[in-house]
Length: 610
Image 1: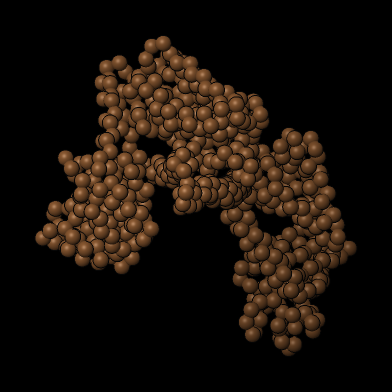
Image 2: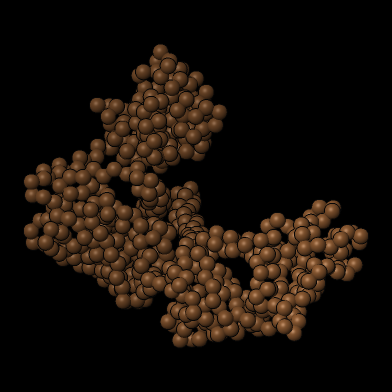
């Protein structure tokens, strides 16, 4: 542009870029009319600056005929004459649309990234340079670590690691691994600003171009709760595995313990079956069979007790009782086993009586279990000590033996359900691993505590029971009622209804031996028919029968004209409290759990006779 004549000259490519026809005269006004309105003011400022400095540079947009805009980079220089007057302006224009679009796209991308980084409140995202100095810090990093951006920028990122990791050079090793492998994953404890620790799970990646690393990006999350949840699940899984192993051991032991009495019972039956057996041998067989049957009943009762206590179905009948009375009952229960093993039992009691608030039967069961264990796990000819000590507000009972002892690692879980002190296959004296669990639960139900100690294998064991002493104002318990004496059946008419033929016929045979007139039915319908014909005074009725169970049979009997007279007894293997309640609702007078002891049956007949 000749500034003296205001004539302008544009090359053909300039006209093309600014979309001006070849024949259109070029003026400064035309030039300004081609600019985007938002860029015009900036261009005029650039022209004014050019008049002062002699140089012009600006970027502006030109509208395109087909829509849209073209970005132009324009540069110019003033030429002066010898007197210093401006005479000419010449310059060049360049199409920079592609570059500007790329810059705008990058700016949009950077803005999106910035928004993402700022919205990632749960993720610490920050960068460090090649030396590990923090160069950027997002809001999530502040939430995770507690450091404000101005507090951490320029600091060594090693401050985020624990002192022990810094001493081992972990921050430097992480940078080297990220540089070498392209990424470095880590899960470890990290430090917050306040000094607390959290379990961080993170990934570090190198930043750079052209193969040159300028720094590193690290993304991290507080994974403490997830780690705790994982550890909890692992502990629960291990506990389930342990429980499963204990269950398998328990089932194997249960099978062993139930088979043990079966062999002598079968032998005893064979002895009694053979002719010519003398009375002494027959009596020995009968006594042995009674012992073995009692052992099987005891095992089943223990299982039921565990189930009831675990479900909160056991209610203690507490009263003020002398502890010596409880201990005497426990010793009497275990005395046959102690004598068979030829053990020496030493009892050290207090000179004066001590009273406790207790259920006599349940507390005696506690000490019978402890004494029984001492007898079973002490080699023949061993020693057992039972000592009683009074302390402030409590009485302490110790059961000690010089038997096989308990391994130290087993002591913390010796009271666990199904816990076995030794390998199940080596436990010839038996036990299901439930006795000590019963002991613990029953003692705690009495407001006490129990603990176990042992010097190790072959060093004996000691179990210590702490019980609160009863207040002196409590009323002493009445002595337990004596069982009814055995009587003869005196011709009582008795109907036995049980789908188990052996159980029904053997019970009928026993009742006939003691003088009863008996009939037998093997299902509910047959029982109803015989009852109508026979008019029994007493009906023993099984519950778990097919077609029509014992509850329904009892209801139908009670609905008959003759149904009010007979005494209905549920004789069944179902012995839970809810089973007894259902029996009462169905019309039963009594509920007896199989197998019924002969003295129980005789006492029931004695009541009928009275």
